[in-house]
Amino acid sequence: MNYEEMNNNKVELTGTVVSAPEFSHEVFGEGFYECILSVKRLSEQCDEIPITISERLLAERPIEVGEKISIEGQFRSYNKIVDDKSKLMLTVFVRDIVDIDEEKNPNMIEITGYICKPPIYRTTPFKREICDVLLAVNRAYNKSDYIPCITWGRNARFIKSIDVGSKIVITGRIQSRIYQKAVGENEYVNKVAYEVSVNKINILEENNLSRQDEEQLYS
Image (cartoon, rainbow, N blue to C red; front, side):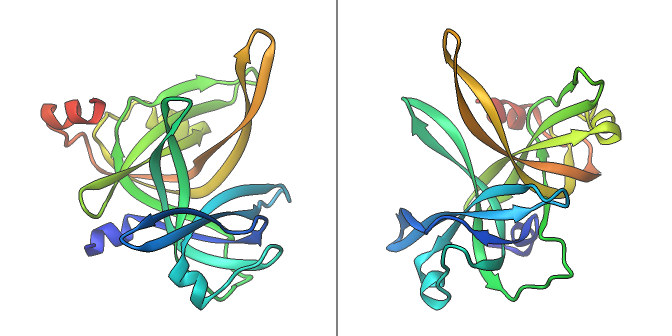
């Protein structure tokens, strides 16, 4: 992994482990485990964020339910087949467990990537402006993570007209959000969505995708 790929997706979280690590998958003989980290907001509400950690790191630094930890890593995506459909899953891949610094923001993310779908702008019934953006963030071995982001107010107005293919830097926090999904007539189930709540946007390059690149993004 080169320097750019190491630094275009950076996450720092401090929170409480609320579920025991459970085996997820294996890559080249190395096992990976998933659990949930509860991270407090300023409002005292919590974001319940899934994290993925290797067995080697757990062997060096075991974690327990109820323990407060700080981690550094990357926000990653992968596709999982659910009910015969491909679903985008999101997790924080843990690179290191570090000492807790109570002075630092407990939930920080900075990602650099390309807008890969037209931004979706809307207003709430209370006239709050929102714009959803999907960002493709390059990773090693020609892979990309597809990270949903949500912007508000001035940032929403700013990003709604940025072209697909534009390279931008986003900073903010990872949030979890419960929503209801219809599964039948008058029947709903609660689902959890994960996204980056954006507080700052910088444009690095405007629409540097060729037509071929753009077709590949939508294929």
